[in-house]
Length: 386
Image (cartoon, rainbow, N blue to C red):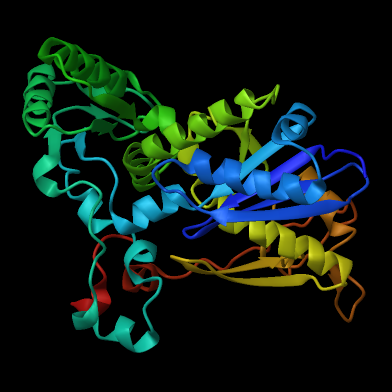
């Protein structure tokens, strides 16, 4: 057999598995115990086991590889076991309790129907940053990116001093509408770094507009907290693994798997996007096998040393449930996804008639009396509750 060109590694809580593949699809596997304190040791041991099965040395193996792909559950285990870094948070005044409120999906996803009905059994997960290390500062940027209230820099300085006294490992910053205009987040970060340098301590500063510049404050908040809490140790582990591969002659950079598929460098600035790189690799493999056997629905159940994981991938999503789009794009879709009524007229999937130009026109709606609108609470209070 020819020498392998790809090595794939999956580091679980108990075992680290390796697969070597050459350009003809031949493969060999290896296995070794995971070494959580230094995952590079388990990685090399597992690779050596696979190389021995192939009949080559580690030097010959790594010097001829084109891709080293490393995935695992280290960062996920850190998040679930709450063994990450000590965080502090600075946010817009009035939004200090966002961490405690969270989302329903975060706190109710694994509850049964009976437990969702009887909230007395409900328990929120432990927050990544406690309320006492969350500080609000006066500032406001509106949804257009215009500054409504200037940043009160003296409040930022006081918050930075308090977090330095608390000996936090990282300071996270999230202000409202920072994805539109991050001017206040940038200034808060500058002040925090100045105070950290003046105190002579080592504290990393993370801003939500850099970690995840998307709409909705809860999304940015969760992302910046996870990035600061769990990925620092994971990034150090990945870099030690890359150093180990270079020691044996690997010429390129180690890659890891994104949680939504695809490969990325271990120097990816948003490493929280690789949080479930291990489980997602199993799902992608199950999808490929499903295609080989002609099964569109791929289910995967993985039982590791620390976690039980279940994933489902629907290869053919139900696009007919998507919201219709007016205009030329809708005209293109009308030819492939339309239906006819008894008179022969075509309709789009939402039931709107399609004219001769192939465009779905919205039906004229009867204007309802004002009393109906008031009863639905569209003009203020819900009158049905009065």
